[in-house]
Length: 522
Image 1: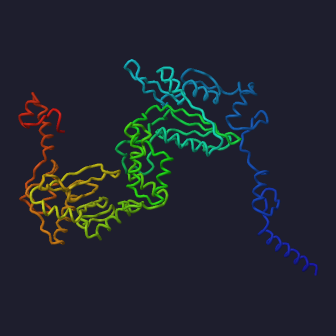
Image 2 (image 1 turned 30 degrees about the vertical axis):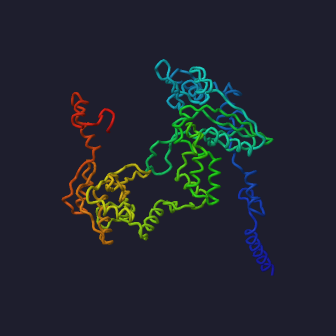
């Protein structure tokens, strides 16, 4: 009976322990039970936490590696003298490893890492001094080059962060400069630093397949001397120090392509977009509001140069679609182009001559998989091509039309008044015979489908590149078409040869009568 009772008791203990293990959390070090995981975590942090600080080997002082090193030198000099001395390679200074590191950073700092460069000219020679900090550059400009505005500063005090933010938005709108936060955002007991948007080094965020814009990057490669320092006190007030002097870039008309639209104006434009105001109306209102500033050439006229691309970005940021018709159908460029091509294909007034996206295989095998081809025209353009195309047809290309470095090839005819009229467009990643042939082949096919007579062209005017003429012969089989060059390319070729001839101006007048060759032409 006793044995059975003992067995029953041990079985009960095991069952209780098993059931308790599901609800009780035990510390692995001291075997103390806790009712929740949070209590166990707090216990482990308080009682069994690993010391994060180092301890001095001569006393109970604890701190970081740097603090312990300084403490050992100051409080235990008798032991630090016994440590092995190191010697500086440049001047022979001796000291401990920590002291030698501080010595090198102060006395032998690598000036090649200095990013602040003085660009002033003294006695016809550029100033070559470099500085590590912006403050040193400001003092140098004020003392050495007598630019007193470099050290000029403004101080403001605000009762709250909201009041400071409203003042900052208005200040950016008035000056045309945009300041981005560089350190921690303003909070109680901290100092936030806002740098000019032109400060910094350009770092591509993507894979680097897209090239820079035509005006280049907005980053200077160093820091602009203008910044805003906002110190938030414990009572909620904000003390602001502003250095308004910009160095390294101008604030005139040349700075406008690199200046962003101030947030104050951007918020007003987004509000109009949300209410359904069309893009054309917004751009007209902006032009009228900032026309005077644009005529004066100030940076505060940045909203005057608002483009549809900026409005599309604002629509995308607030999650809406443009109120008026637009070629941008989707935020994804590939999907947007596909939707635009389908819209042309389903329209009775437009004709899709050729279309191929990157990654698709060409049915004819002439284009590569990574090529992009998009050719189209309208019914009106096709009728004008049939009407006026029998005499002269012109083709020319324009490169670098977008960030993708695509080519825009235009096919135009000469009307009865002598004016040129575009009749088809080709947007392509390449400007050679296969890409141009895709457009011309589509044009021939469209005329056959609509039962329109394809004109027998007498003259084809292009530049010196033979790709246009070869594509024309391969696509239309009109071998009687004569290839002629435009006057601009003829004049350019002549000038390239006549530059090696003496009495250049007299020869130019002889071969090109009635034209002043010294001031006109390429």
